[in-house]
Length: 74
Image (cartoon, rainbow, N blue to C red):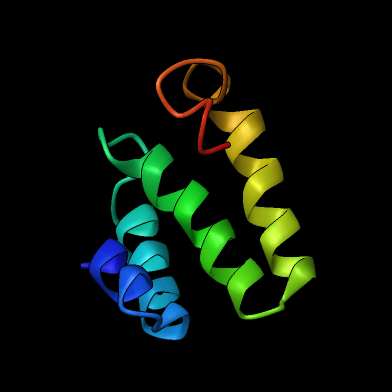
């Protein structure tokens, strides 16, 4: 749902879903995606501080994904 909101130009709604998804299951298969896209949504909202926090946490917690399947987005 977060990606759909982001694609529709609604980063605030997207951010809420990405954060909720990430916090619900940080070890889930889509948790890295949710955290990375949370950073992207925050960037679109011009909230650089929170965007940097999300992206830094993504890189720290999910280094395999940052250098692997999500590398192009990261």
